[in-house]
Length: 318
Ligand code: NA7
Image (cartoon, rainbow, N blue to C red; front, side):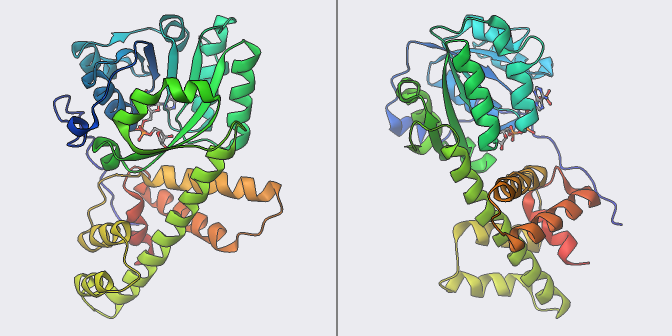
């Protein structure tokens, strides 16, 4: 078993801006936006929302992470419930479906407020359709409005304001979030009023990504066994019709052994697990995705949860 060093946690640079922001001509909404979850994605998004002059109220489970945002002009609250009280539209961006549900249904969670009239809740955490429907139902029962807005893209794409937003649910909320979405995304899609569709589309895209990464990792590991230069393989791959910006970038990371987390491996495996649960409910056979999930699970066990998904290469080399 290799000795694995954890990737360095990069502190958020409050002064860095995506180059694209200046060209987007953003007129900030007058509404107050709440933000629950200041992880790598949440922090990057909130930083740009503050920069584009949105009024922002934040909360994070580890409270220390809020300070740079307070210094930059955001208000901080003690609980998710307090954020809901202070804001008109509340975004949530945490690790997984369990965290997303905790923030809504748990102690001091969103629903503790009981009356969510004039409030809107936007779920950005990657979740499965059933979780999204449960959250949406809970919000609606308290007279609130709900939008799922799944964010597709890496941490670098978030930093560049180049995410893709896949939204579904309440159309009025979608429209009211326009200036926020324009700040953080290059494309935004409204996939209908049925809650769950946006989650399905996001997870389907993640399936393509996960399976492709494992294929790439195995092919490069075989090249390595033959002592063929990985850089040569990547250079030739670049000239073929198979090339894609993402696979090229991931191939280079594998060749260098640089697994700085753009899409953490634990998130990739979480997504595959959610995909397989969805497929199970439909009796849809997904043998390749199942094996892909096993490969990511094993790489997690080897200590690469917090590294980039491209670290799957390490396992393929065994
Ligand atoms: P990170 O950087 O791993 O951050 C995860 C965030 O989620 C962080 O703020 C955590 O708080 C928070 N978290 C996790 N579990 C919980 C629970 N149970 N309750 C409250 N808060 C929680 O992930 P990213 O920012 O890269 O990604 C976030 C989402 O965006 C994810 O779904 C991606 O797929 C898209 P902490 O700071 O640890 O206290």
